[in-house]
Structure formats: structure tokens, C-alpha cells
Image (tube, rainbow, N blue to C red; front, side, top):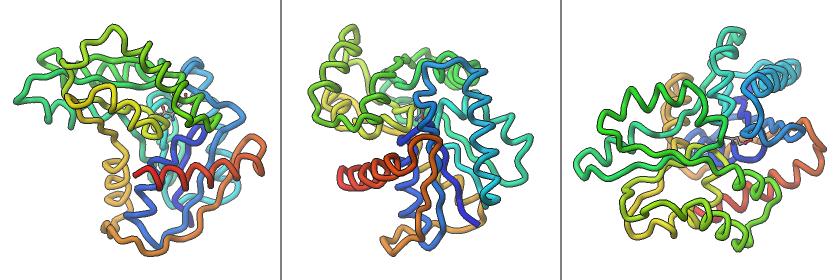
Length: 258
Ligand code: DGL
């Protein structure tokens, strides 16, 4: 039985990478809903039904040992529905607001959450912020354009920098202590984002925390060793051969950038 990672496209690679390091020797299946990426600009109803039907396709192939919804957007609209119908553990993601606020407790500096428009518009997100942000330190900004750049494998930098320059133009950068990457595609542009807030802010994501949670659910213990991991089987709802090439190129790129 495999541990299944699911994302709208290639963003889940940034979470899978942590699992390959911390869970050597396991079998992994990665499913990308490339026929419908990006999710972040769709409605909640659309994404919920896309996620449910993608998981039905996966389960037809094999029953997962666990399912990691390596996508903040899919988690925010579909996690409850998935848990209701799945006889295996379902692990979701949420923007790492809690560790960010803990980090800024003493400094009182601001936290900026970057995610897709759909994630930021959901009650799940506003509930999370209102539960934790008693001092009003959290700001949020949608960056859907970065998802497109990852899917197009456009890492030359100029487009990303121009896009970020425009998106961050109204922020007072020195006010921020922590930047939260609340979309699994964004770690591909971590260096570009960090350079806008340097030397003031740290840039964090919830990827390792998600994998540690997965490990607890499986009842295993993390082994941070670089020993060989099991095979990664790739599936997608788009052009599988083309997508597979992209998947392995992006796996390499992400590994190399860390
Ligand atoms: N990678 C996803 C996330 O974490 C979704 C990006 C998209 O499809 O818009 O939010």
C-alpha cells in the first residue's frame, strides 16, 4: 500500500520531498490534477467536486495507506467531505499561522500569509486567524500568479520578480517578521520571496509539520536519513507522459534548491 500525495498540480512536490527524507523505504504515489489546475481561482464547489472525483480515481487503482492532501486550497474546501468517505487516514494542510505568531509573540512584528484567493476566502482560514491572532498581527495576500509560473516551469526569475514587486508594492516590508507560504507551489519561489523581505523576515511553510503529522498518524518514527526511498508512482488527470516528465524535473529542481 502506498502513501498518496495529492495536489492540483506540481505544488505537492514540496511536501513529498520532506516525506522522502523522513520516511525512507515507503512507497509513494503522487496524483496531480493537472487537467484542472489551478484550483485557487475556481469556486469552492468546483474544487470540492474535483477533489472528490480525483480521490475516487486514486482509490480505484489502490487503497492508500494514507492520503496527504498536499494542497492548502483543496484542504480548505474538501477535507471534511474526504474524511467522511475515506476508510484511511486523510492528512490536510493549513497555513502555518500558529508557528508564525508564536515566533513573533515577543517581537510583536507582523505576519504575512501568502496563499491562493480561494484559501484566503474560506471560513476555515478566517476561523484559524480569528482563533489565533488576538493582537491583529496577521495580513494576507493572494498570489495566484506563482502557481501558473510553477506549472509552466518558468523559473527564469524576471517574471516572478516583476509579479512579486507589483504584489508587494503597497506593503511596508520592514514591518514583517514572518512570511507564511500558505500554498504548496510557493516554496519553489522561496528565495525570490525572501529577497523582498531580507533582512527583516523569515519565510516559513507548513510542509515539514504536515509530514511529521503523517508520521504520527502512521505510527512510525521519523528517520532523517538520506537513505533510498521507495519508488514514486506518478498519476495525473492530464497528459500523463508530459506531466510525468515535468514531475521528475521539478522534483530534481526542488531538491537542488534546498
Ligand atoms: N498547491 C495548491 C495550494 O496549496 C493549489 C494551487 C492552485 O491550484 O491554485 O494551495
